[in-house]
Length: 153
Length: 332
View (cartoon, rainbow over the protein chains, first blue to last red):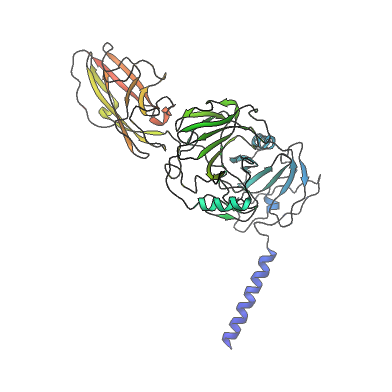
């Protein structure tokens, strides 16, 4: 009887934990897409700098309203389930890569890595609170896509 | 380089995976001289759409770019390089094709390139070069480590870099292979061709010479590059020459020097990772006084080494009148 009660308690605990986990924002939480022209939520750094629990990216992310964007960029909706913060359509060519190489330091971000390529280029950078972010440019001759999200492998 | 070859995706996928089973040290070195250059993205050995096999063996079932590893359908290795940096031949070979007419930053389907045929039948491709930045001609014999071009961002390019590709022929088709996965470098990981660091020298690096007499001096450097230091008469052999300015006529040239600036070859062949000694004479030609002579390593006719990495090597020389030098032991 005692063993049965223990089993029931264990199942209850597991179920409760699952419920809690599903309700907790994860490291890959998807911020709701902001309509064009809507100011992004202001940047709210953690008091300790680093969080023990997974952060809410929408709170830690660069302020999209002030984030440098190429003049030709057109904001796109985020794919469902994406961990990206924002996505834009840009002109093909290496202009976007050069734009961010220059604009990120000017906007107060520290570039931590550059990875140029043929059809892909990435730039890693940090904000003042140690948040690590990445811009990926996917482009071919016809079109190019710019993605902003957390640093990823 | 996208679009150089258009075999069927399935056949290419199989060939790339099969090629990956051969993993032996080969005779290629990294196609540049700057040891700080890292890999942006390597070869995708699985050219099925959105399935990526990187150089570590990891397979990614997605279409994303993976920093330092791979992006989908990539046929070569991308190395970030500031425009107009030196691009070097990865192995001895013959230039079989080139183009240099595109603008250095001209975006488009094609760009400037050099294609080299090697003794093992493979070919290497150097892509996105600067306009008029090719330093060799079709038919030229090139030596491993020779600077063949200046980098740029011509063609299908997002940010200045060198796209390097190793091609192997199968059934009449040329296929991209992965030098990292197949361990085609002379060392693992691959190294730049010519790199050295100061090790030690005799007489604590300082010499006293009686005016009109010759003494023997030796210095040792560690071979931190990917190519074995040869001491034969070939192009690319490693020798010690005067520096600052490069190849100036030395006032301390002894009878054993090869020329007014060329003091000596490395004493014996020195593999990557080993220490090579250079023994040469110093002649007390100038009047009594305190002098110095600066030297640097050079891959003959190809490349002067980074002098700073050699501890800015120079030999303080004290010339005296008719007094025997006091023997000293030790290292600097």
